[in-house]
Amino acid sequence: MRNFAELYRMDLPHRAISVYIYLSDRANKDNTCWPSIPTISRDLKLSESTTRRALKDLRKAGLIKTEQRYRENGGNSSLRFTL
Image (cartoon, rainbow, N blue to C red; front, top):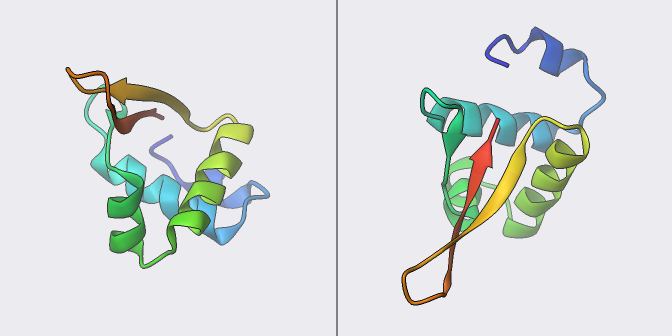
């Protein structure tokens, strides 16, 4: 959704709209990106818990999908976000 008019008409909290625009700005041509939650929080000046709530709002609205990524050693890496 590159046209945000539809996004603004949705019944979403402002935190979710901010995070969606942030992810959209960082998405590649396949509409995926993988910023960490601390990075999103720092850049938007939100707490990490607020960022997590915003991501939950966006998943519930069907605007994003998340996929856990893993390092070679099996440890967790950042999430992959698909818009």
